[in-house]
Amino acid sequence: MTDAIELTITDLARSGAGVARDAGGRVIFVPLTAPGDRVRARICSEEKKYALAEAVEVLEPSPGRVEPRCSVFGRCGGCMWQHIPYQKQWTTKLGGVMHALGRVGLKDAPKPDEFPAHDPWNYRNRIQLRGNGDTLGFYARKSHDIVAVDTCPVARQEINAALAGIRTTGSKLVRPYKAEVEVLPDGTVRTVWNAPHGAGGFRQLHDEQNTHLQAWVGRAVPDGSGVVFDLFGGSGNLSRPLAGRAGQVHCVDISIPPDAGAGAPGNMTFHRTAVLRWLIKTRRNPERFIALESAAQNIVIVDPPRIGLAEEMKELLPALAALKVQRVVAVGCDPDSWARDLCKLTRAGWRLTGCAVFDFFPQTPHVECAGVLEKPDSSSY
Ligand SMILES: C[S@@+](CC[C@H](N)C(=O)[O-])C[C@H]1O[C@@H](n2cnc3c(N)ncnc32)[C@H](O)[C@@H]1O
Image 1 (cartoon, rainbow, N blue to C red):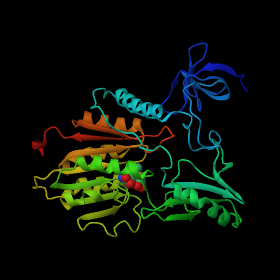
Image 2: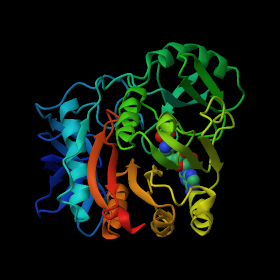
Image 3: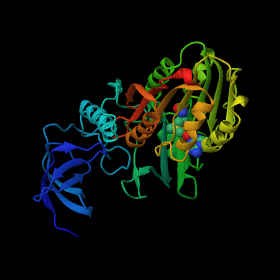
Image 4: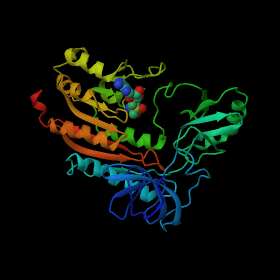
């Protein structure tokens, strides 16, 4: 084990860690610190240009720190930023998105619309708890030990009110367990025991920010649009509200909950398949989906997981032409993969005309981004 060194934290990285430099000028990332802290830290791993360290002691706390609300902050693997004032969290996220765009050559991207969280606490509509006997809580940072909690300050209050009952039920189970607790849209709380992650399909975690995202995406879809293709659409969160404005809506996702179609508008169709597979099939047979002579605008929404459009990108570009798409709305939860995908689209001639940044995950470094891209010459279809 290395000796501890003294460091002054000068910045906050968008990964969440505080940033310092050692005596030789090398960058050191120290999680759970704040700009202005003086800490003793121990190097845990070294890369060519930087090192990662753990703070063993805060020698002088930054005046810019705030008191974390949670008694297990720092031990629990969940939040990383409860000691950072919310405004600083937000500006770091915004700056991180701009940095990601700049890195791929999109320095001149339009100024993003900004959606910081109105209330950065008690927002999560779903949490995943771990339990064993009488202990109920979350996995600890970097381990599968359980950190016991009575309450979680980022979970919705309805969830917190249910925790004692979940602990009582869980304590009667013979084995360690997982409990996924969710506030459903009608306000009831549902607990699912020991189901694989995401078994019930994907749902955005922050209802208020989701409303902003839906509205922002909606503004990119004019009345009288032709076909909206919602790729990585889940249960149609982003496209369902648009069905009244478009001729047809096709929602494509590998994991569509069985009840997704219930109550869906009549012009909405769900395709339970991998996006890559769907793109390959569709490119060969686009008339299955669109009336090729229609002058109405067709729109693609993409909202992939963190990895972004991996294999899918090379099939997406020809599919956009085959489906006569005039506008792409690209949503992403990782600024780097999102910016990389925007860059590939712009290199293929698409023009970035709007951006937005949403804080779905206060008290953590995660951030959601969206962009609108226009085909510059729609007459060429
Ligand atoms: C970030 S979520 C977005 C869901 C939806 N747009 C929403 O707002 O609720 C990503 C979605 O991609 C789906 N997914 C992941 N990999 C996929 C793949 N290869 N093909 C199709 N869907 C995939 C997941 O099931 C998940 O629903």
